[in-house]
Amino acid sequence: MATRIQTRGRLSRPTRNALLTAHIIVSVGLLGDSAGFLAVAIRRAVTTDPELAAAALKLLNMFALVFGIPLSFAALITGTIQAIGSGWGLLRYPWVTTKLLLIVSVILVGAFVLQPALDSPGPGGDAPLIVGSGYDVAALALATGLGVFKPGRPRHTRNRP
Image (cartoon, rainbow, N blue to C red):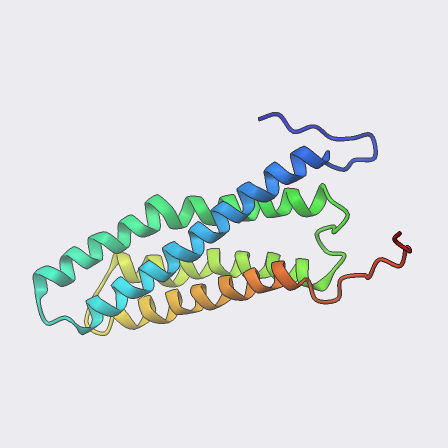
């Protein structure tokens, strides 16, 4: 899909709507992936069955590689383009900046907490998986709420008939 940009540097309404739809889809998908990752990490932590623990680790790696990484970057890219191509701007409103920081933090937690724990699991190695994915779920839920409520959003003052 080619992106049309109007002369003022803003995305056209159909392009904005398509991009917003894509952003919501990948962001909700990432939240679901993170919640599923957390559930499997908790199940792995409480099992005494070594075969189940090994299978859970393989599943967690699949969650990370097939869904987590692509959806994280897709959410970052679609959100950034949406912010820059609309009137919101990327750093103009605190709620947009906070959403940006939250998705970047989710990517960093994945790279520096979750992936190392997946690469070399050991005794007590499940704690970083649970804490990291718990953080991701909370951060993504907060970002979703910010996108819905838009705190600090300017009020329109024009009179409407």
